[in-house]
Length: 156
Image 1: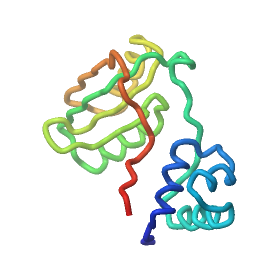
Image 2 (image 1 turned 180 degrees about the horizontal axis):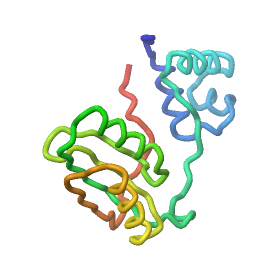
Image 3 (image 1 turned 90 degrees about the vertical axis):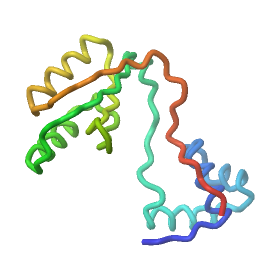
């Protein structure tokens, strides 16, 4: 479903992205509207798929997940059967926060969140035992400089 977003819709999206736990009254006040129109627009954008599921953002370090690895994967396998097995493997691993198929020399990049290097090694050993991979390079993030779930909402 295609939906046209006006300025108020965009303000609502920005407000929701910054903190969706706020009340409709608070969001309506912030965007310069009243509660009912804001609620109707949120429902419309949810129905159209602009707004997906709402969730809570947890602090990985507070949960002991202090190591973030970016895993570069090159494979010589490109058949559908291998891709399906690889996808099932990734979906079954809660450590994998993100997975992207790439253009270029590297086929996939994964963002993996674990407690430490030993936990990463357990993840790596499990991964290569389930799917054949030509080359894996793991890069340890030394410092997270920016992390956001907020999309840039272009003006109307």
